[in-house]
Image 1 (cartoon, rainbow, N blue to C red):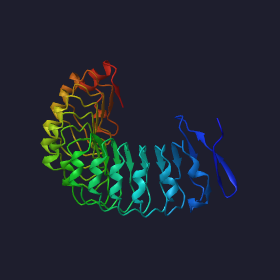
Image 2 (image 1 turned 180 degrees about the vertical axis):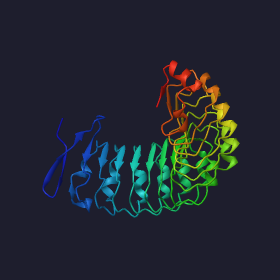
Image 3 (image 1 turned 90 degrees about the horizontal axis):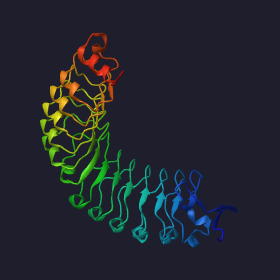
Image 4 (image 1 turned 120 degrees about the vertical axis):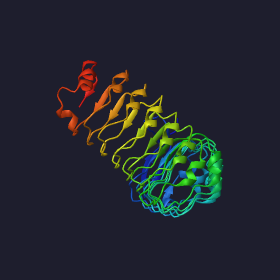
Length: 329
């Protein structure tokens, strides 16, 4: 096979396979300001990945958008202010990382990337998304935390099942418009200054991953128990003093993270979490645990560090769990 290469400032860079076996160029953190200086890139017909992260690019040449085989494009931490309309020439594109640029909007043509499954936009001053985002029929992961985003386009309800990371310290309230995106299977809203969760969160019927850690929540609505598909629920680093009885409704929940709250106990209904393997309660004020915990046959780890209950050396619930080889720490 003929060796493919490009030249930058007189230096030769050979096309190589990455750890996944994809052919491409690793050109990150090279101080690049202008890709027009790269010779030979336009001849890279079989290029599958291109990493240009951590440079100083403020625009992209047309030659990038002629790479018909390109599947993975990494452009994190540059100075890009816009994407050209011709981005939809990259028909094979599956992932584009644009984290930490200066994008304020996206072109409508981005909705034509029908093979795109991962779109990472976090750390850009984005205020909105085009309605065409609803056409990304292969989308699995969308990240745009720490943006200036204000609402979700109605078209997003047409997306397939996907995970959304919208953690955003600029939020003043739970973004109600995301509740129309009923195909969400994962939602991360960590460190987002949230003080309450709406009862209508139960609209997200297929959600299996929910992380609300690092907010200012003092309670959780009863309706959260309607999220029957949850396997992970993260509520650590809030201000919870009590949990709703409905917390026990999650038949498939495997991990419940309640670390660093103000809980003194947990509801009896937790004993109904038949799939639970890990329960994290570190740094609360737990003084008692319900006997129903003994019904959790799959429980492996119980984290109780820095809770008063650990001073009760003869606690019958803890003794029984220890005898079953549950790891308590």
